[in-house]
Length: 96
Ligand SMILES: [Zn+2]
Image (tube, rainbow, N blue to C red; front, side, top):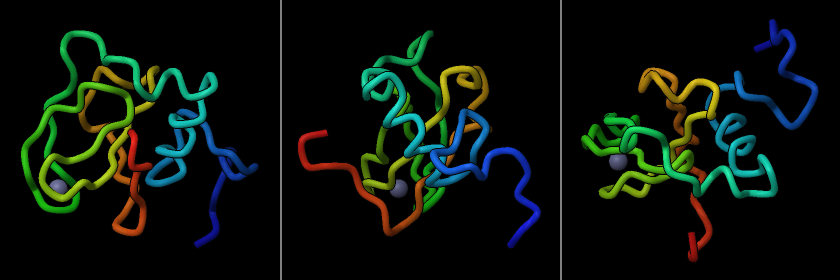
């Protein structure tokens, strides 16, 4: 690893990747952003883990099939390519 430029100061930011981005969005504005609906009905995407097609309707959401956690940061939510996957070892709280 290494070569981490500006986003390595802990806590991540809207341009982080992977789990760091997911955690950033979950914590943004006290957690209110994470459960907010994405404009225009959400983003169609494919699960990075199992390949299932689903629509990410809130900024943090999970695959209906494998429960893989995905998120997109609000400034970048116009492109499904910006959706980040938190990884297999990450899951949302039960009451998400
Ligand atoms: Zn999946």
